[in-house]
Length: 262
Image (tube, rainbow, N blue to C red):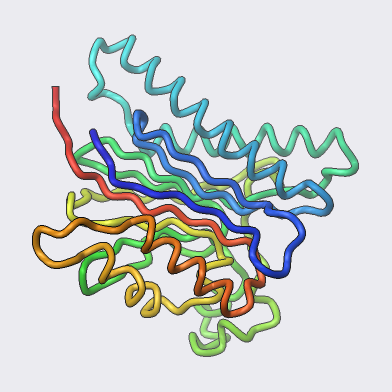
């Protein structure tokens, strides 16, 4: 498997620390964005633990499955992601419960795990995953946030989401509670499609249609031209910062470009 991808993280304009973490291991087909929360260094620790534990767990599970089955076709990417995020939750919670300075820390986690022809997405929190085509963008994940709960309940309009005073309150995070419910999605990716995973430091500053407007010309140039993935992602982060940079901004753009079976 080969990938066309780029990861970037930026502290933004208002924060003194970057509590986001990003990760990519194309040999595993694994890509992660985590947005930490917690006083002092708690958020930074939680997000870095999340990507480290998820990556290690995914690697161990895949290697174990291949050894047991003598092939790489038997493992379930959704189940492996679920177990990995649950393991990260347990380890972060355990660490915070033994350190008063880290008590209450947690992190979002949105992870892609490719196992062609399938893509599994695991999510906790409000870091998003989008599917991007030349002329369209879809949010594949659902925000685990208070405003999204209010929207689904009909208590708020979509237009009021950005100005709601509770817009930054999430209803699930990795490591905050002993048990976690991981939301999982599965689809069959088209090699021409891109996937964007990002923290709310980006989506809080740009509307979905603006994300598409920034990305489409760079990712889907004229026939035969090369996609400029790094420039496309930098343009998104620059725009978020130009509009105030209220939060850390982290994102990954990923495209599966080739799959050879066997």
